[in-house]
Image (cartoon, rainbow, N blue to C red; front, side, top):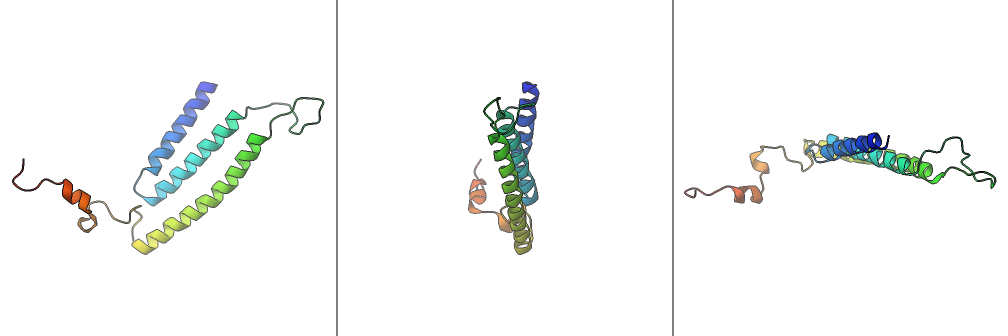
Length: 127
C-alpha cells in the first residue's frame, strides 16, 4: 500500500513539474494546482489514517491526530484562492500582451530573440 501511495504521489508530482515547466500560462496554472494536490495528499498520508478513533481528546481513549486534516483543509482553501489569483493574472497578461507565453514572446518570433540567442549563433566564416 505504501509503495502504491508513494508511486502515485511521485507520478502526480512529476506531472505537476512537467506542466509548470511549459511555456504557456494555462499549463503553468494547472501544474501549480496539481503540485498543490500532491502536497496535500502527502501531508494527509504522513498524518496516518486513524479508523474508529475520536478526533477530540477525552482522556479515556486514544484519539486521532487532527493536525494533518486541519492543515490540508486550510491548504485547500488557500490553494483555491491562489489558483484564482494566478488565473486572473494569466488572463490579464494574455489580454495585455496578446499571447499566453510566460515570457510574452511567441517561439520562433524573430523580433523576440534576445542577445543571448544571437550571441550563441556562430559567426560567418567560423567552423
